[in-house]
Length: 408
Image 1 (cartoon, rainbow, N blue to C red):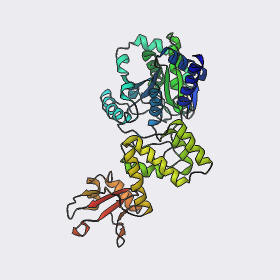
Image 2: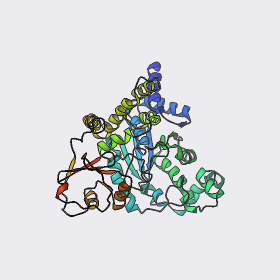
Image 3: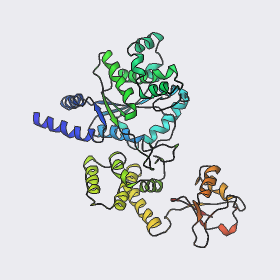
């Protein structure tokens, strides 16, 4: 019986520790797993989000995929909606105070956020908690008591705070309360494990301190890497344009994965694609041993990323479509049609069809020679003021590498 227990602990540890940058402390984590399996008591896995935007990209999903791995092993995911911390704004990595959001803003964003996150999480094993459930009734005496449990010296050791002080940048008093509130969340929900990126290590460890002071078993901090974007240089970010959005169309997702540098494939196999631990290890081994051609490997990776969010059949279809468009220079099967108004500008038509997001994006793409007519006699469009007449009926406009629109 003891051997069976040890084998199950080892099995769960291998799955759950895969891809983690740090587990603090690792022996406590193993002990927690053992007790959980022994008593058949699910661990409570905490992950906090500040829904500052309704849009979620695959960089955000790294921690949620780890939460799903816990859920698949019978544990419980607890997602904390930071409707109070969002009013401060996470200072981590920021040069200045972030704009505060209202509770109404965060509530609306959280609804959209969770709809996207549930593409990965198991809703039946997920509990959603809002900070306002416990912070709404907090008194000044409570805040002073929490503040007394840490020191200014500790807070200014936070990399971001220290850098901003050293460089003479502004630092609001309210920003010191961000890690305090995040730490207190762990006390209120009695978290066993808290997930976070490496940039969240300081805040996550605050939870351990506050739980110790409250007489609780301190949570284990499980820190994951920050996912690089499709450029292979900067952290995935919508503002940098190097992101793959959860709400991106399947063909766009496929194409964006195909655009990543080869050296990112191992990283994406571990943190983005819907691989099991054994599948990810086999994929990485085959890459390193050059048993997989980089182009074929990337197609397989892209197929699995699409499959995770849209289903296996769609993943298969996107691979076929991608090969038609880029290998055989054919059009996708499902080119969207748009009934344009004769005499209107191409810019207006593409904006109305939501193929480009704005007039400024259209002009930028024109300057980059990224808009063309799919016709050997026409090709690139250089006139930003081009108006459409009947000669454009039935023609397909290509925008960037992967967006197509048929004018009718």
